[in-house]
Image (cartoon, helix red, strand yellow):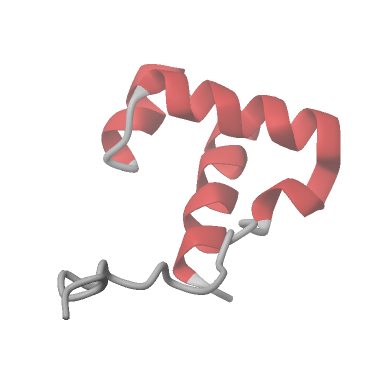
Amino acid sequence: MPVVTWRLARMVFLSAQGVAVDNIATVTFTSPDQVRDVVHNFDVDGFEALYPEFRGGARRPSPSWNEGRG
């Protein structure tokens, strides 16, 4: 299980146990708003919300400073 998934699952688990949002934020080293977002997303999407969606893709090429110069 990826570390991110474990961290999100821990937030949801603590919330289900009745732990206050501020305490969850302290334990997971994040903000209360982030905890609320994670719990809300879990309520809407279920377990799919625990798996992060990485947005990858090709890296942009660095600019070539020599283009156009003879």
